[in-house]
Length: 436
Ligand SMILES: [Zn+2]
Image (tube, rainbow, N blue to C red):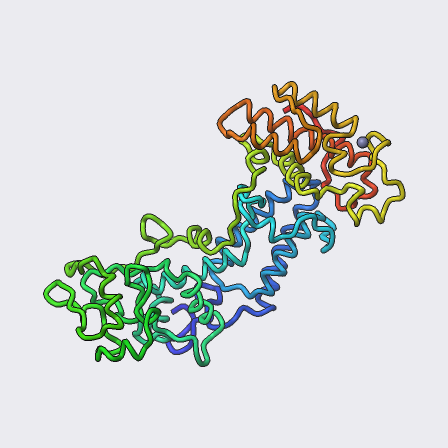
């Protein structure tokens, strides 16, 4: 009906290759070409870093909805995709592969954790792979899951399937996702008729008996490997096999009663509804960091994206100042282009330079936030400890004064020194209107 027969893997399902084969470089070239074509369309316009970041997020979103949810993407393809996006972010239309100011890995954290809120393709793809696992367990009436159950699982629980022998690459990844998300799936026991006694994760801690004990010990109970949980339920009560002290701790941990009039149900621990969604799986699997101390003063309500982006770079010391090694090589005079007196460093630009300190004092005074410090690190610390309340208007105003001062200083520095920052943000300093 859909172009495949029961005996051959569904290479194509609704027009897309599914899981019988690994996506090849050729398959993925189409994806890369589409991505590059979209980027080339955008680059006709002059965009700021923040504008490019926004476009990257939108293309990533559509990729996540479509490609990344449908396929298990090979690592090399993910690297190419992310490399293309990174080149576009940092170098714009030239798409040169050098000159990244911050590594892509650091960008792929939520803003509160110091990133730029970009979701890593790899982590999203892992979460999406887990969705296949969920569908195999829960979907009924789907051609794909029916095929998997009859041809790949042959009636067994997916928790029992082995990653051995000639299994396809994508199937292997789906089986591996059982380990990535261990503890997140839990079978709740109704009658016990549909839950594998040994292989399904139904113990209170989300583990299965096979993950908790040696096979030899489980076999000593005399219960077969295909036993269901209902084989240890009698008259609505537990009837644990007697005389197996090694497993008694597991039986002892079971404090709930079977509900024999209900069906067994698989529950996803990542969401209060018990139903799987990719976002919660992504949140589980992603790398996490502590809340970044300066996130609150960068991404406050009403922030201007291009200001926030430059502030984010300035906090990391990643703007092109002459103290940065790759910048130094291109210039002969290591002097601030704004005052022409002091060496140009981040600490000098923000805000020890005569030009920028006047700007900062002016804006911060207007915002009612008089800063007692002159060192960049002290200023950041002072701002984050005094102006971190999102719902406080005067806090927002102070943060606005800071990010605007940084941004205007950066624009001036770019305007005078753009010959040594070819990576440039393409910020339109000539037409910039300083008014909010
Ligand atoms: Zn200066």
